[in-house]
Image (cartoon, rainbow over all chains, first blue to last red):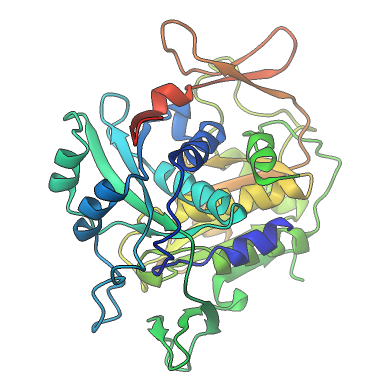
Length: 195
Length: 195
């Protein structure tokens, strides 16, 4: 699989095969990848907690916001829920702000997960107070994101944007999740020399 | 090359073989990768400008801050400078803030560049006003980062942190660039179940 195939295969996943329990070691290996990613001023202020324990995963699940555009859907049903979580934190003893380090780390972890046949969702809507209590975090660790992971159980289809430019994703009658993505022409505002 | 090898090979590069002029098409292909990356609420608010034109690259170069920890070095000399730039912008008509989308996009572009034998540096210290003028940007586009790219011409070595925990990189007597990276033990603050 070349890199472009990996990037295209890395779709946001919100339904999983919950019978496929993950080994925490797989999640630790994904965190280890982040040792080698760029970090603003090389500060490396991010910390991680990994959770593959089914009981703890069940405690974390209700603390997460799922798919704001799907108004009639409050997240995956029992049986379709994530089987692992990686919580990404900022260590405020190291830096006041993460810059875009958490984006760099999240994408690296997600691409690594896809290579292993997993998939997931980067979640920023998190009940941080409760999650910090569950993970028993010290005050210097601020939760930035939770990556929900598992073996994907829903097909995701990339679509062109409709004529009105609406970027809201939807679930089709086919049961697939459809996600409109902007065209290259829309993203590229300058090219020198002109092609 | 598996994904971990790609991530490890992706070191921040600040010296290039300036004789190797890039084809703008390579940079456009890297931007195209970002069509398929996650984006907060799927807004996809980032825009890109690519520059492989040597004259324009020479105009952009002095607008960038290089390697704050190397006090006696103001950036690569003529002959070692980047041969391409990708400027990443936020389209404020789409979103007020980028979240960590620019980190996701930057790392994806950098990994794609490494697969093609290129390398580079994510630069946040940018004379945004002058660069916006050079690129003739409308007011709704806010420059977030500049990715400097080229064919690498310096070896980069990952090191363990010294006992005092200093994360500053340095250039060795060997001419190589040495970068201390935190250990997995330091990054991982929780693992459930315990390994």
